[in-house]
Image (cartoon, rainbow, N blue to C red; front, side, top):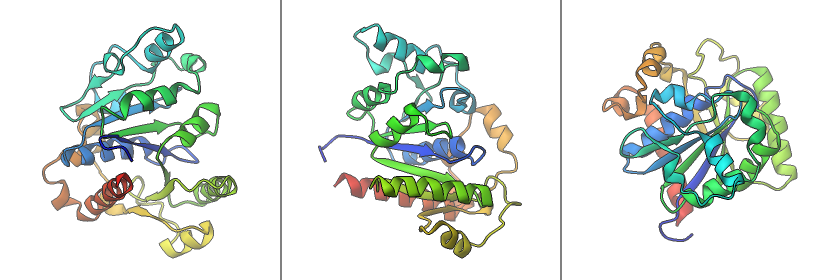
Amino acid sequence: MIKGKGKSICLFSSKGGTGKSLTAINIAGFFATQGKKVLIVDYDLYFGSIGLYLNKDYTKTLLNFASDYVDNKSISLDSYVTKYNDNIYFLPSAKDPRSASKVNSKLIDLIIEKSIFYYDYLIIDTMSVLNENNVEVLDSVDLNLFIMNNDLVNIKNMHNLLTIFDSADKKNYKILLNESINPYKNYFSLYDIKKMLGYNIDYHLDSKFFIKNIDSYIFDGKIITLDKKFSKNYPKTYKVFDSLLKYMEDENE
């Protein structure tokens, strides 16, 4: 690993509604509190929500970057990202879902190339579909973090996804079980989920991380992991994000 080279993480789910985008933001927030410089890229090309969740005015999107790249302009990624705070920056998806077809699947390679020597971590949020663009992302990043919930459909879909990865001999993934998004839908025990999946659960956000007033955070553009009381209020969740960061740092050595 080259010194000073950042790492890329893709958050992917085999179905919608798993809390994937909020998890991406919370990971970015936690990494930022540890002094890391983070870029969040919203690669949900149809209905991305990162810009909405962060509630910051922005003028340029992933589409602008993609269009200029196609036009062979000499472009700097800095000209397209929006600053959230001193450690967090983001590149939102286009507001019009009809523009998704204008994003070339190879664009993610350029984004990674232009960001890994400037940011400590590149966090890529995706849509829940195995299309050409997403497959390119899954192939290109250092780590795929698969987000799943505690329900039968999600467990079945995740099992299928992991089978595909294993058949392709792809091992660059970890599994995060997110039971905080809906604490009333925890149908199976952790043991049962592991048995049905046939895989281990690497990270677990339990129901105690359920945020009743999450809408107020979104309206204010706040990231809960940036709260000074986060580690005290949610010690188990703090350990999850800390464990993820330590894993990524160990991979850098």
